[in-house]
Image (cartoon, rainbow over all chains, first blue to last red; front, top):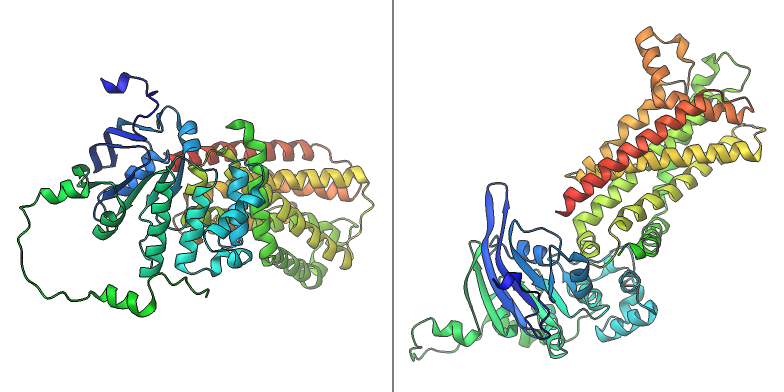
Length: 265
Length: 254
């Protein structure tokens, strides 16, 4: 019955998903997905490969139509008002969606133009500075390292200050430092009031970033809660004495410097 | 969002024109094959071909060469469109508040500009090789119009190929038959020396009427019925290809 109501509540959830289903031929990818994302929060959709995370993000970003169910983004129904949804969102897909032939700055100017902003050049320069890409701004994006390319990708997504951002596996394929950079960026975004929905297959990423975590498994949400709530699902922690070995990641990061800004290739 | 259609198309055309400026080899490559064909036909085969007119052979065959130039140039549109979809930038555009048609029109207008540049290069080489015409400004304009329409019609075919291809090679392979079509037409030899079934095909396929029209315009002859047949073919191909391209685009989006 809530679906019939108009979604005009000023501080309603930024994203509402109810009973969304999607099949590709015989393959049922989403079998009725429900969740809400509170405005200004970071929501992680956790799932293994093929769980349907990308399909869901594509439906929410109006790239794909659901077979059944409703989804509203920023109060707009994705099926009925795709234009309004696109005004409110930004999608950073699994593969860095940058134009490799254009320079970093030209990529940003391109997106600023397509968002019909007044001063695309100034917007581009501001973002280059914010993402430590000013020096690389004049080089073709094709020459960037994986981390720089991802930063440019995310910078492009921030143009026009969309209130909701979808990040589909933002750190897949990145090295540890670049991953941490992306995490810092996402945290800053949420501090600024942006709602972030991110998908990931890395448990630690969800743990690091998310206010709420939903586990998508075989096309449905099998758990949805804060990290503390999810941890309570298991029996209370037992106290064990184990020797604390540094993980290889700890070693690697301490050797190369976790926050060291990336050297340009 | 249709209010932004023109501004968005301009922005995206600017983007892909910049791609061409960064790799001008695409224009050169497009012009090289027709120029090589022109050299072979004029200096190797041409002496043995009797066109039945007083025209020099290069005057006779240039219209067909220009069509081959365009037919090979449009494959780049399919290629670029395919790469956009592979790379994810296509999805970025689709998830943004822009006029969706502008994504295709940006590529189509870029194809128009780059093919006309290739055609201009080929015509310049033809002049060096002895091509001569007394065509008026109006006739040149008509030739440019026919070639522009030919480019647009074939580019929309290329859009279909680019949108539905599964591999890069598949995206550009569709243009090979188009490149060969002028050989089975009046472009290089008069059709009346061909065996009856081949001659019938040659007489009735679009290239012959287009070639005859351009040839007549260059030779300051009346274009006769050919121009209307040519225009009917071109507009027909344009409309059908456009409709199928839009349908393929919609399929891609849902």
